[in-house]
Length: 566
Ligand code: ARG
Image (cartoon, rainbow, N blue to C red):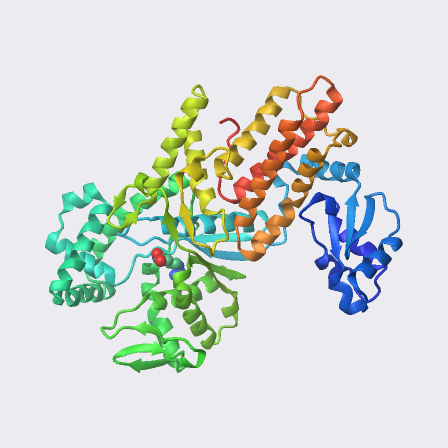
């Protein structure tokens, strides 16, 4: 497929000797309105270099552009140079590319041989998988798919929160108020309940805190009883987390959580000592970061136990050795930004030149708009409940609209989950999101089901056509505004994937899919597709076919299924 911006920047570079094609390429824009052309050069960006007004630059350049079969016309309008593409050659080029590539349209091999570790999801054992972890899971999973599609070798790591002082508290709580039967039956909810009870009681009797600390120290010393209880808590929690991952259709390459680094920390602490980075402060061991305007990074507590940051440092060193990553990406809430800045700095101070390959990808806070629909456990909203609700709601809608749909439970899962995940990935990740059921499950709104529904509509048209699309379609017949708009949207897909990868921002794909679906539906409503005239019908079906694959590939990149019938 011809890179349109490249073609135009090459043309312009010959006329603007002071700039090279690449500079011009980066100045070119896709105008928001078709009347302003398909590609535009904002000439104010050249004013300083050429010492002329934008209007004058545009007017001079417009005279000099040689005729080109791929360009219909060029206009100079108030300081902009607007290029209008030749529609027929453009549509032909775009559609034949998608028709040929299908499942791999948009895929590239720029990441060949490069490992990218993505640390995401990472819920905490004995604590519920809540809606905040959904964000990490959805964003991380999408980044995984995006890197993979671009040829990288992503490694998905679920850095489970399965170590730390909280397990000491849990052991105390279990011994004092827990029962084996209640926990086997109640699972995480029951573990949560005794954990909450611990905090209530510890307010009255602070000695409990010491007891808990001692249990965690015992864990770190390999005490059998302590470790058996810990393993049991972990098994119970994982069983529940796996239910959520199954619903989401997500698997990890590694479940090495915080506990995995237990035996790797002593060497790291030794290394920190050798490198003269550890200092004592009130009985604890820290890395002083005052020089970098940050509070100290706590490495060992007064009682000798390690911390979240200690484990992250050990994990990064281990991962570099094991995976030789080009990037190691951490997807967590923005509240942890300081934590990452601190220990990234420690890695730098240790002399590791790969410290700049560590990347924190923060996201905003999630709140729930339609609160009434959510089952509440303490103060948290369980993701599993949200997904179940979404799936049931979708099943209701299917039962109203299409009760005879085959395999409808599975389709309801795909769309219910799609609704939740899509909504989560709709805005820039750093923005706080508010959940609203009405918005999420509105099949006509800018939602996952809307895009999935549009994909299924394209599939249905192709099924009804009965004949395979002939790749020798006549592009001259796709001459309407709506058709050209769809082709333009299709053209943008590879570019959007690249931007999403560079900005580590799945919402670019999510928003793109809504735009493409809207453009397609406008075309669908304006023009009959299964017409008598076979040549016209084939041309329109070629467009439908290309939309189907682009939507499918895009949905895949944000972790959504693309059911063919809904
Ligand atoms: N378990 C942590 C939490 O729930 C997230 C862990 C993120 N990954 C990491 N390597 N620190 O907030």
